[in-house]
Image (cartoon, rainbow, N blue to C red):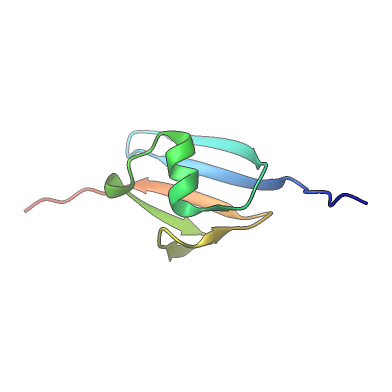
Length: 77
């Protein structure tokens, strides 16, 4: 019997300092933070990514039911 791959469903909020955009995503395969950002067309150097309030690095796996927040980073002096 073939293995059934269930979709991974996540909620993603994109906070670009001026507005927030909320999306519900359905991923067809295992995905990490870097792959998720690539698929969404977001430059990794420009954002922080958190899952359920914890900052993530590129290789953290996205899991079903995660709430992902992608926030622009600003620096100044």
